[in-house]
Length: 143
Image (spheres, rainbow, N blue to C red):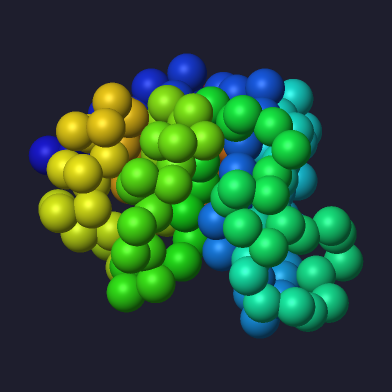
């Protein structure tokens, strides 16, 4: 049985989007816009230079805010030290896009540093149509 993710998990004044990608620009734009439409200021992060269509920060440390939520789209093999960096930035909740973005060790490390962790595509809570239906099946409450 799926673990229910409450709608409040997705609500934030500010969030950091780890792994904002030019390669997956359409999805990243859609996900960031979904958060923005729900009143969240999004700070995209990617250490690589590229054409992202929006301002992208090179690291978590360069984000000019203390976001309460982090959305992580990167592959877990790129997430060394991520939990400590998020905790140092003041992040309280971490949303990993899928099991490709985290493993039990990384999730446990986040929890040990005081962060609440969930694994879900944000479009399940914030999106429409098929995304929303998928969220309903997965136990994600509508934000």
